[in-house]
Image (cartoon, rainbow, N blue to C red; front, side):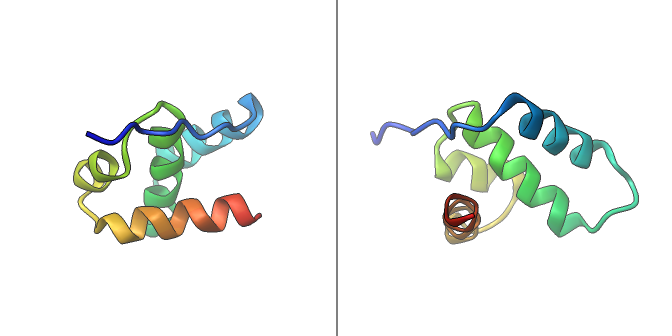
Amino acid sequence: MAHANILDIEQEDYEYLQSLCRCRTIQAQIVDRAKILIYKAQGESNAAIAQRIDVNVNTVKLCLKKFKEG
């Protein structure tokens, strides 16, 4: 089984992502992206994240790639 890499993000960014997930007025797509980053920061695998938020694993990979590219 592949080892899940942990996404290294600042505490301030982590808290901002959590606030996005609690917001009821933004698009679901933005919330999903925030959740992907949070779950990755918690050490979950791409496959587990995809299953958890019901998206394709390629969606998770693309989100992480875009985050890392800035």
